[in-house]
Amino acid sequence: MRITNVIIASCILGMISAADQHEEMRCKARLGCHLAKCDPGLLSPSLNANEYPVTCVRTSAQDGGEYKELKSEMRSMRTDFTSYASRISTLENENRKTTAEMETLKTKLAKSEQSIEALLKELNALRIKTNDLESHRVEPNAALVRSCDGAQLESALARNDSGGVFNSYIPTIGFKGVFCDVTDDGGNWTVFQRRMNGAVDFYRGWDDYVKGFGDLQGDHWLGLAALHQLTKAGDMELKIKMISRKGIYSVARYSIFRIGPGSDNYRLHASGFSGNATFDALSFNNQQFSTKDADHDGRSSVNCASNNEGGLNGGWWYIGCGSSNLNGDFHKTGTKGIWWRSWWISLLRFSEMKVRRRP
Ligand SMILES: [Ca+2]
Image (tube, rainbow, N blue to C red; front, side, top):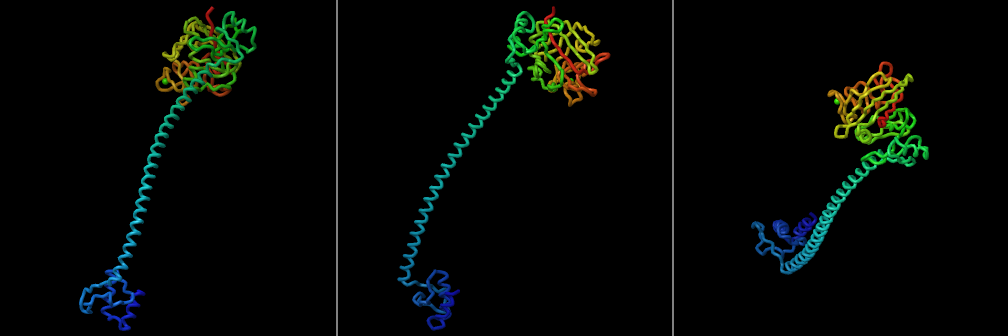
């Protein structure tokens, strides 16, 4: 707009007509001529106010100047282009490198993930092994004995004060901590179950019942695997000591007691009942063992070992959900707890199960 005003002003001064000035503007717009000073030399000699279009003709001096200018601009643009091309090439190289590095990192990450997975598996295997060792642990201060009976035990007794805990050899398992009852009824008993104060949780899964758990001096379960090994020869007897909440002492004995192998879910074989417990709440079972996560009981509608299904809690040889459950929840009061069906006792505050070779 400012340039137009200059041109108009120049035209008023008689340098160029208004029509010429108009064409100059068109010419400038079309060809990029530099007409700011209304130089008539830029115009075609045939310029006429009534003739259109009018060609704007550059002077050779101007052409030369603009050419140089264009050339310079082109050189500059070429330089810029070369520079941009170089940068693009650099960026492309960098991109290729980055992509290659990313692929390398991805590969490393995949390998790391595989390593972590392998480590986790190893860790899990170690944990299982540790649990196995823990459940079959050898008591550090207890003497090694072949079993809870025999002269070896007598001599071991003379030299340790572990209060009945020995490291007894159990076939296929090795040495394992056990509580040997050396006083009751002539001794030689291997205790495999005791409930005396509720300090140990018996509401456990299959693996724990197979391996064993608890405190050998207190509440504990020796483990079905050990029990099978101890009794599989079929020459063992069982004694169960019970004390009711009312303080009534009771005994149940079975002259034949055997626990089947794991392949038969440690089925119970008990017969030859005697004792003052008045009711044989075990031998008629002849059942497989069940836990909260392994239902092998005689009732299809529920899992007697699971509290989620209104059961009795704790692993046992259930046929139905009745008769007995010495591994149930330990309660001192209430209507639920450790129990043995009897005419005068049912809910208990103490139980102990032990085996020894038949005389
Ligand atoms: Ca069931």
